[in-house]
Length: 378
Image (cartoon, rainbow, N blue to C red; front, side, top):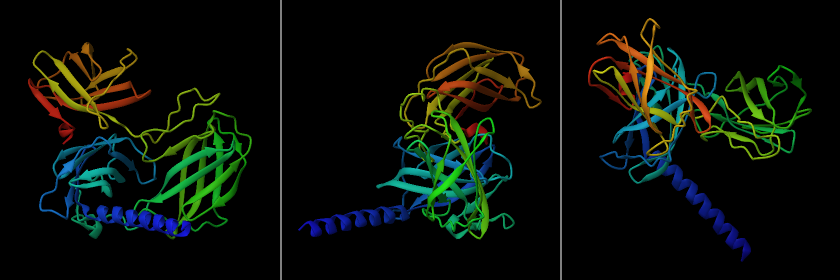
């Protein structure tokens, strides 16, 4: 009887996995378009119905990586019933980014994962990405996979486990050999001995001697044999029992232990806070509303340590005075602007989610000028 029950459980699990995969295939990316200044339009299609309906559940997550595999800050929002707007902060021109939208809902399809590639070239567009049909024949969607670090975990006092992913598919195939060079160092540049204690086609486990509890370290893997080429990747970890970073998570998950009370900042954190609306009026006042992609509101902790700047295209700085602020907005008075000219407002050291965030947006010094959800970035 036990064997039958176990077999049934396995069949149910297998069926659930197959059903989930089938559900994902029913929602596809129909078109990706780059609009400049970090803004990307992602059109999706529900192939099971004539009308696509994106449902924003506030459970969606985003991961964006550049061509080196480094996670970069970005946000995405629902733009209309069949379009997401993605904004890559400080996007580089002529760069290739891979993105993954996870746990989205389209119509009745829940828990859908979507992934794609975008090139930050003016007027770049690709229709039916799976078929790689792009109007820029000289810059097709990359044919080779992009290897990146999906998860890193520290445990047992000196063991580091690193999981990898291929941007094209769920699984990847690393053919490890003795040419791979592994270097572990602290932030001062001191090197530590690292030994391989296990590996598979998509992960590797290391033992590192001499680490100090609570300290941050960098691991670099050179000449990883992948997709008929050699790849180099590097990332950071913290020597705290149970410390884990997963690329789809909002931030590093840290188990509270002695010596690990300091704020841990990862280079590959997801940016949740974004500028929802910005408005300029005739009294030289600039009102900025913020929002969090996970919730309907946000709670910014203003502590007067923020650095707020307004600059023109020539980088000239204009005096800014704070008029009022709340947990999700701020009103500034900016003097000396030329009517009709475009300016950039930046917020540095903005404390949110127990970390400092930097946000930027453009506005035009015209009475009644208003923009919502990054549409001013066009």
